[in-house]
Structure formats: structure tokens, C-alpha cells
Length: 80
Image (tube, rainbow, N blue to C red; front, top):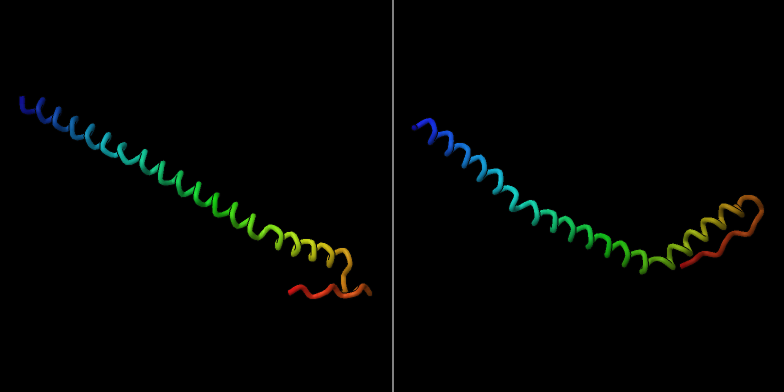
């Protein structure tokens, strides 16, 4: 009888431990989802805020590559 009780107590402890950990899994997934969403919003805001400045910067680099100053072309104006 004691062996049966010990086996059942061990089984119950195993199940309690197994299902106790599952309670936190949903909360963890929600937290990670919120963090990913927040990072996406920050990236979108940064791209919208810096979009025109970055476009001008890359256009200047593209112009410099197409017409290098050392090849006889006029130096591009300094943008401040």
C-alpha cells in the first residue's frame, strides 16, 4: 500500500510541476509579442523621421560614385 501511495504522490508531483510551468508560457509569449511590436513601431517611426535625410545622403553618395571629384568633375556642394 505504501508503494502505491508513493507512486501516486510522485505522479501527482510530476504532473503539478509539468502543468505549473505551462502557466507562464502564455504570459512569456505575450511579452515577447509586445516587445516585437514595440521594436517594429520604433523602426517605422525612425524610418519616417529620417527617411528624407537618408534619401538625400544616399543620393549624394550615388552622385559621388557616378562623378568622382578626382576625375575632373566639380566637387559637390557641402550640405550642412
